[in-house]
Image 1 (cartoon, rainbow, N blue to C red):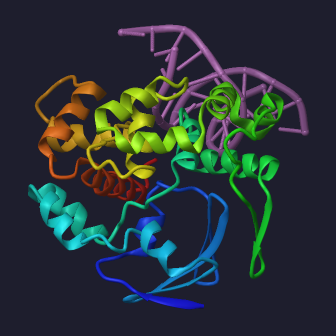
Image 2: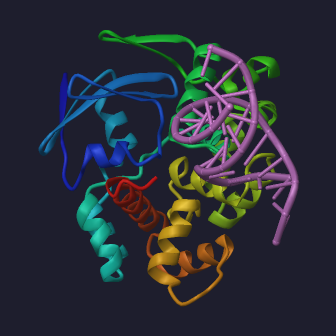
Length: 276
DNA sequence: AGACAGGGGAGTG
DNA sequence: CACTCCCCTGTC
C-alpha cells in the first residue's frame, strides 16, 4: 500500500457523485475499475492510501495537482452555491478516459446510476479482460473497436442504446477522441453530438468528465430541478437549453464544477428527505 | 412538444 | 405467483 498527501480533497464525495460507475466499496475503501486498471483507494484524513496504480496515475486521475481551494473560491458567486460547497467540500472532477466516459454516458440516457452500472459492468464482462487485485476480480473496459457484436451488446441489457454503442464502437478510436482535446469546448461538443445517442446533456458529461472542459454544464433532471428552485423562482416555464445558457453565463468561472456541487447537493438533500 | 425506449419495482388479482 | 402499470430520463 502506498500513500500520497492530499489537500482540499474528499474521496467519498468525489466517488459518489455519479461521474463514475465501476466502484466497489470494500475494506474501508473503494476498488475502482478505470479503463484497463483495477486499483484500491482509501482516505485517511489528509492522505490517500492506494494500491494497484502508481503515484503519477493517482495525481492525474484525482486531479491532485489542481488548486481546489482557488477553484472553489472562483465559483463561490452567491450564498446558494456556497451552501452546497460547504457541505461537500473537496469533491473533485476526475480525469477519466474519454472512450470509457463516452460509453458510460451513452448508457446513461433514460437510465439511473444502478442501471448504468449494470450496463457497463456487463459490457466489460463480455468484451473486457479479467483483472484481479487482492481478493477482488473485475474486467477491463472494452477497447474501442472490440464491441463488434450487436447481439452481445443487447445482451448487456442496453436496450435501445445498443445501436448507439455499436456505432460508437465502429466510428470512434482513441486517436479520434484525443483529437477533441485540441478543439475549443463548443467545437468539441458539436463533434460529439454528431454521434447517435449523444445529445447536449450526454456530450456535456463526456466533455466535463472525460476531457476536463469546465465550461460544460450538463443539464439533467436534477440540475433542472435545482436550478428552477434556486434561480428561476419567478419564471413559469424554462427549458433545459435556457438553464444551460444561464448556468454557463452565471457560473462563468467553472460552470462544470458548480454543476457538480449543485447536482450532489440536491440529490443528497432529496434523498435525506425521503423523497425519490 | 410529445413519443419513445428497457428494466425495475410497486401494486393488484 | 403472474400480471399490469408506472416510473425513471434523455434522445429523437
